[in-house]
Image (cartoon, rainbow, N blue to C red):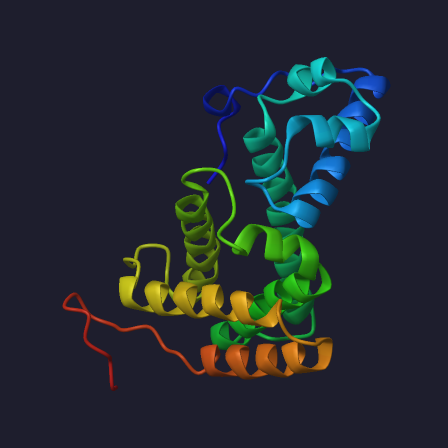
Length: 213
């Protein structure tokens, strides 16, 4: 899922280094304010004050606080995609070819990223976001899951909807749990969840039955 800036009201980014620095400062300030008081209670004035910028500069780069929130999520999701891609690439370079083990590596990397960025992750999984964001969050996680579940099937095979639902649901719940636990406890839970996921197998056949052969 890619957020359409035409829909969110975002303004084109300046090409200058100064414009890029201002945009970065506004995002950093928004992250701080959102984590401190929550999205719903945050105000544009607090963000620009924290950034040392003006209200005009914020609206030059963004359509408002909802657009700031979505931009922060896009950056977080990009980091997560890079983490999982790196993990799968490393596993393949080490000789791993089993799709279930590759999926294990991807899922674990995603959860590790959530633990490493606990405060940021809590912001997006707290339920306190722009209208409709929870639905977008589920869609994005489902898309991420589909890319990893695709490791199980050939290019011409249909998506196993049941497997997709189970994995994406498990990941959503796992993320919600690990961000509220200590590092050691969170990583133990991440181990347990991803080990269970690695035991899953796709169903085969046009009627969705498990292939026992």
